[in-house]
Image 1: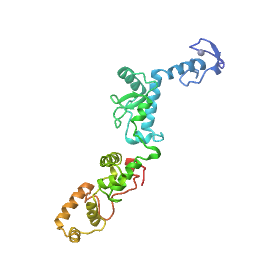
Image 2: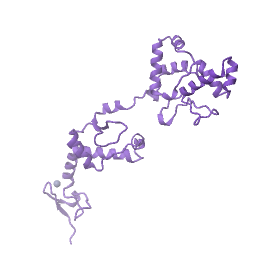
Image 3: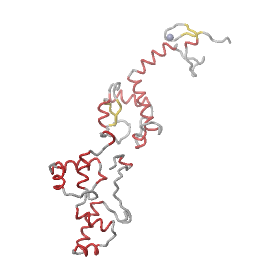
Image 4: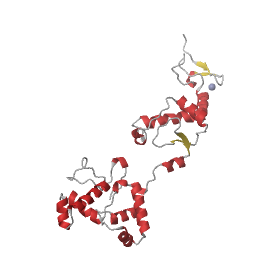
Length: 268
Ligand SMILES: [Zn+2]
């Protein structure tokens, strides 16, 4: 058989040289039906169509959930988020038939941020909306504001251990502002709490760091061991201290806030 040198394009109906056709293993002659020019036009049209857009979105969804080499894998697959659509067609049909939205210019978003990419949990939002859904970060990774840190250092028993009133006075702000800043800090960084009072901090430190018994602590303060015992119970509860898990031998409160699960990098 003579070597094929020309081919008829199924689209533009021109007979062209074989070099004008891309290779295609599925075809008898190993070439695509349409010439490169026609194929490119059709491809561009598909790429910009709703189905083409959804096809791309499907594959990037699969990629960030299933491939640890994806730069954002830790926020998707790494968090257990899965893409439960089994094929691009299933996803495309779901979006076009059920959601009836034009996803071009929009980003795929999950309604429940901890849920999977699955029917019922998909919506399309603008890039702006999607970015504002992400946890707000302060410049240079500060999740704790300077003002929050200021109040914290005044109030916390490992620093100045002032009362709310003393803190307000020292920083020249209202008591309400002190409480507001602390509430904000607690919402962002719960691992920095609780804050003990001066009295509680002293008892705790004697028992936890000093290894003294209730009787010894009570004797030093001229109170009954029973009252110290009761106070310790309250502190343990506040500190979430579990005898079975924690031990007095090492301190459990840490100020190196590089805790992995919270992803908070701020140290002070
Ligand atoms: Zn053609």
